[in-house]
Length: 192
Image 1: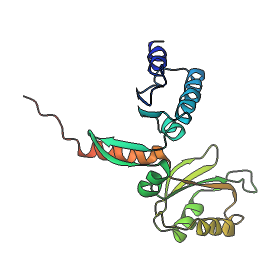
Image 2: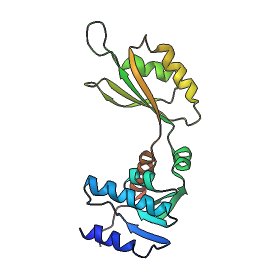
Image 3: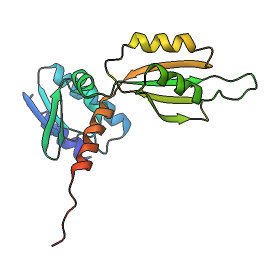
Image 4: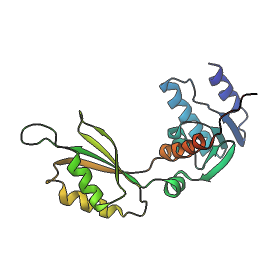
């Protein structure tokens, strides 16, 4: 309740710049959605919003520019599209496998081998055998989407692919890449 009150107080007087620190933390989904709408209309009215957040979903919905900080230093600044293009890891391919004639799900192995034969840097990073999904990262951002679609369409029947989708690297994945760098470079604290 206190967070809602302080956020509302920051909007009094139609300020030109509004600073908010994690404004969505602790809000239920309904209140969160309402606050998104309020802040979007405030931004549309010409006010500048500066907010801190660990939620990239919120940043994509509300921010025209995003800065990512690591160890207290700004590592990047730009539009969400710029950050995804510049620091993204290519594309993610989500593939749902179909059923074989015996009613069992088709194996992921031929699919992964096929994709890697066309895109050698591709890696299967997750699979859900119960739902029949495979998630394959194609890390080369210069890979033409047309080549990905052409390769999958030409082998869709042979590999028993029911459907698939191609996604650009998300802002969340960019954020996680930067924070994993933070963890890698943090030095352990020394005892006195």
